[in-house]
Image 1: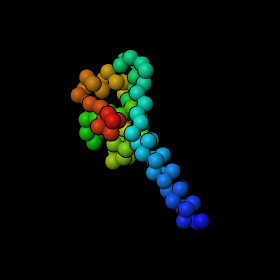
Image 2: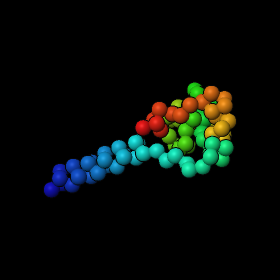
Image 3: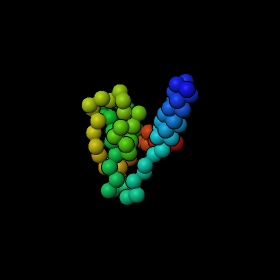
Image 4: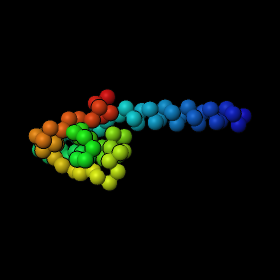
Length: 83
């Protein structure tokens, strides 16, 4: 019985984490009003989610800017959030 419960819990956790990792919330605003997150010391990608896995190496060097400014300075959308 204990093994069955453990398997159910693991299955639920895996399915939940998989669906969270692939879902991206793209704001329904114009480029000028949209806010994105960048890591200036760690690449040229922007992120809609401050807690995106692509920002893990940046630690505390995360900066918030407008989407328009990010695109103008050469930033592109994070590959994790493109899915």
